[in-house]
Length: 238
Ligand SMILES: NC(=O)c1ccc[n+]([C@@H]2O[C@H](COP(=O)([O-])OP(=O)(O)OC[C@H]3O[C@@H](n4cnc5c(N)ncnc54)[C@H](OP(=O)(O)O)[C@@H]3O)[C@@H](O)[C@H]2O)c1
Image (cartoon, rainbow, N blue to C red; front, side, top):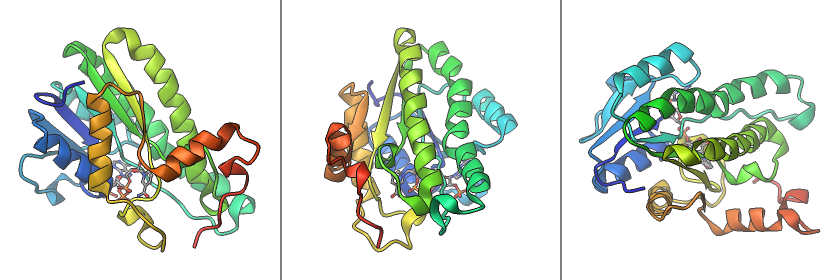
């Protein structure tokens, strides 16, 4: 879809990758860019309109859809993670995974369901779901996060099929580490979120359904079907 003259909403657009996407949308000529955030008073960026949105709260999501009736492009970016040092045997794994799913999966579902009628009512548009390379491999100490991203990928594939004949394009973004607060304590190579935002929006404008934004992500996905798949023996973190 074309970004020029679109009206976009980026969930979790107050910092990190979401803010990078919001700024890139503004700079590419979007008519309006909303960022859906938990604390609108804390957001002050030229050409970006903060609105209150907690993706884990159905009432907040409904109110945002009511308020932003002109949206044609939704970016489901809001995300969270939990570390459970005992890996898959951590006694808190179920509860921590529940918290992560509430944002990364159910939040994505809630916001998509609320905004599809808005986008369709405005003549069609697009949805970008921010996922991860971890849709296709696991890290035990953040297995709950990985599970949420694998599930978000699956949801996105179903959503894309449902919306194909309603004029709404659905793109999933897969990317490895980016330099944001989410992974600030990890000493690993990280991409610049502004570069990944640009690659993502290039993909959207080219009509792509999936963007694999870095070489690591392309390797992970490519080897899912090989005997030495990356997911079978990924390197340890750190
Ligand atoms: N950084 C990476 O290495 C990496 C790699 C692959 C994918 N991703 C994905 O990229 C997306 C953005 O993450 P990031 O790296 O930019 O992380 P981040 O800097 O921690 O930002 C996360 C954003 O999500 C928002 N958020 C969390 N829970 C929310 C809720 N219930 N309602 C509304 N907003 C909520 C946060 O808002 P508050 O400021 O209110 O907390 C913040 O704006 C996530 O989906 C993440 O999984 C990140």
